[in-house]
Length: 142
Image 1 (cartoon, rainbow, N blue to C red):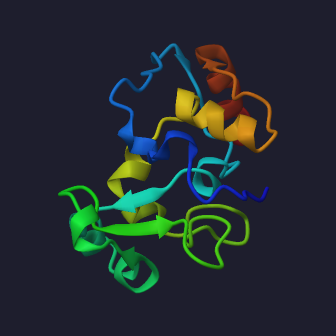
Image 2: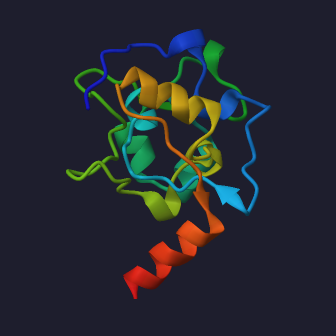
């Protein structure tokens, strides 16, 4: 999926929404790895994120002084010549998953922002996985 959005709708990054939906344990969404959010919303990260994952300072663009906040020091997406976050691998999976930025860690599968990104990419809504469905999926993986 390719996105031509230079700026997300309403100019916010995924972690900006203080009223994120919190799925219950009984009815959670499981990420299907579509990478729609990584190709749609701005990915703004902190200096702390860059300390945890040093490749951020090499790959990201540092924000101008007047745009920095304690949580926003670098932008990972959009960048010139990139159609998604620069850390997505050839399978559209996060190449820095273990050390990914806070905004990515806090982004919830199935949230309003997730569903908006999927809709912009012409993907179907991400449906909740019930406890029974999750248990069935886990047992089939064994």
